[in-house]
Amino acid sequence: MDKIKILIIEDENYDIYRIKKTLKPFENLIIIKDVVSNGKDAINLIYQNKNAYDICIMDYQIAGGLMGEELIKKMKELDPLMQIIVVTKMTINLTDYSFANRLMRAGAFWYCTKYPVDIEDYIYQPTDFILSLLNAYEKRRLELEKLESNKKLSKNIQDLLSSKPIIGESEKIKELKNLILKCSQSSAPVLIFGASGVGKELVALHIHYSSSRKFETFMPINCGSIPNELVESELFGYEKGAFTGAVKEKKGLFEQADGGTIFLDEIGDLPLSAQVKLLRFLQEGEIEKIGRSQKIKINARIIAATNKNLQEEISAKKFREDLFYRLSVFPVYVPSMKERKEDIPILFDYFLNSFALENNLPVPKIEDEAMRIFIEYEWRGNVRELRNVANRILFLQKNIITKEIAQKALNFLNYNFLSENKTEEDILSKFANFKEIIPLKDFEMSLRKKYFEYVRSNSSSDAEAAKKLGLAPPNFHRMLKELGLK
Image (tube, rainbow, N blue to C red; front, side, top):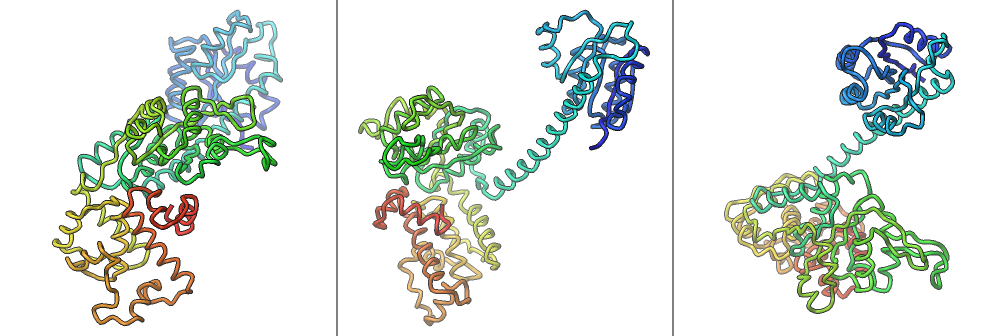
């Protein structure tokens, strides 16, 4: 282990001698780097030598005016990780919690009283004094490790947010970004609403990773993908023996997200029985686990999202009004594409460049007439549909996107791929990863993925898309994950 580097602030030579005498048997572990007699000199040294000292041993009352809690605070401002041990000859009752609290709040690690002057060799009981130094050094080491770890996590988080940006320069998007910033500075519930495909989960992700909870779990839960009879056990868990088949305890998703953020997508699909438990959690910070009489305290932030009109759901007795008001402390509206048409060229540019880089393909140029078609298009599937169309454009393998190609990309199910004198081999080469022959199962997976993308982009919700495909919601969401679309 590296030697523990000490700064001493003491204005009496006799007490400096006693500190050195106390530390001498441990000189293989502890080195006194500097000794100063007043607070101002200490501040200058720390300022000029950043991170040079592990521990400061300081007298509480010293000459020069800068002393006590004021000196501790100034030193911690310059070096937050330096540990400070206070020694004093003031007559202090060791049970004087007021004095101790003032020191700890100022930033001190520990304090002790000096031995009387007739004890010549030691500043304080040697064993306790050395143990306090070792403990202080260990605390600094752990805080340094945590700081380095947080730096790495912060970089990972910035990389994540950079890879999932909110694209656009319209006034609507600028307002949305400002609102995300405000939401991230609080732990109050957020209700995100807007049409299908506008990017509600992306907004929730940005709120979480811009908040003080960013190092904790972000738990996305699609309320429409869990069968009604399993919602409560999935969200809140159950105890062993709570019901037939409960052979062991199960932690619910709320427990797993303790300390972090829970994102409840499609909140309008949550059954009324689960809505009651969610309301209790929002009111009390507690969950009721199936088969457990005692409630469990959970510290998690709730962000919910919906593309439904919850006021209509309340009128239809499908959604609790009190839950609606609890969830919508911060209402966040995500605009549709028709409300931010000026962002369409920016979005196309971003997605085309991303997909081209991913597939090692040149970025096609979009002619003005083609872009006008995209700008005037309805975009019922919003950003999700636009993203799919951008991907489809690359699939068409054209260097220049004309008005005709834009129309084909927007209406690809009616596009006759055997037109323009193309042979079946040409078409298969397009599907098969751009002229690479791939296994049949991979070809089927590629085709299925494109069809799922199309159905989702032309549906108001994933629940509607599942219905169109004739799939139960849980199976639909499982297949989305298998296709890499979720």
